[in-house]
Image 1: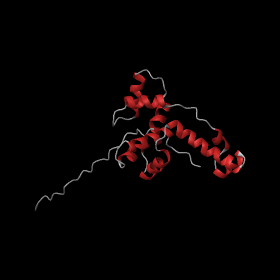
Image 2: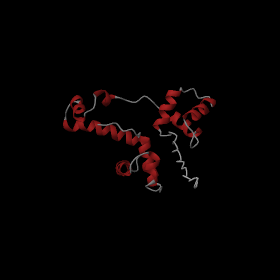
Image 3: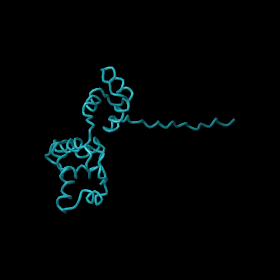
Image 4: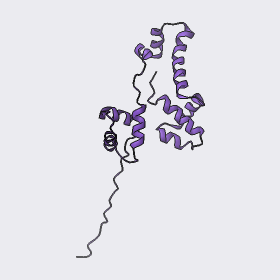
Length: 159
């Protein structure tokens, strides 16, 4: 089972954005997902809160063990995941960093400017943590394509 690169919070926020009336073409672009993924999330998580989605995922994993009366080791082998993944509880809580980045970020600015603003505000997070969260929430600065310069070929006449 492949671990999603999107958090439960992002899933719920994208579904709520779609339900609030934002056009369906705009929501996937905002969250860097496909339309198909958005509609799958809508059918699965519509009307739910983040905590409810987390509980649903835990129940899905436990359901295999209870329903088929097999050991956790066997269930993990069938799902092609490690047992440590089954027992793993994430300890990181990056919500404070995410909120801080979103509050100081201005469109078009890169990581360095955002990081320096956070430091000036007195935040003591190191650059590695801020950069990891920065990449996680897809705030990468968009690079501009170089404009092509065309030179016109002029003939120097009849010399």
